[in-house]
Image (cartoon, rainbow, N blue to C red; front, top):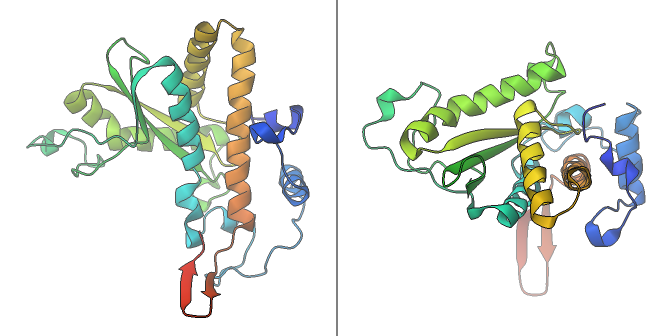
Length: 253
């Protein structure tokens, strides 16, 4: 029911645009959509916990939790490059020099702080806009007593507490948290961002905004699907690759 969450169902499975799912992926997503059991999942995770969808979306083994926002970041950066100048992926913030005490307690204050994307002139001409992405698991224990709307607000507030004041006062820019639900959909800040981005893209390409909006939502929908499926089916075990001369141990990611 979330805006954009079902876009993947209404497009042709064109491989060239990465709109295709294989047989297992399609039925896995359908099962999650209708809350059916997913066949073929292991009984236990490599971390020894019971393995189910909820655990798959929160287990840090394999690095899937950290990586699942990367494709969203790359799509955002690519689209901003079309309509903005000075677009940067994983930009550093200006280093602090005695301003730490002016920031709130939960603010990120170290010199190596990076956000996901920045672009100049997105909201205001010549002003640098910073964006940080979070893909959260709505089934996590911390959200059990929260509505989905409240989950978005919680995550947006956390991001703003980390970065907003520092960016406004030190970097003299703007900050927008881009919060997505791992199962599809997005928070109000993300909806506002996507709406303005699609307007800029439509104006640039001289096409209807509705067409651009559907295209962007489709790209985001499939990106979220792929990260979700990786969390569920991706290998979290240590694999050993052997050849005639040496044994090389690699951790799957």
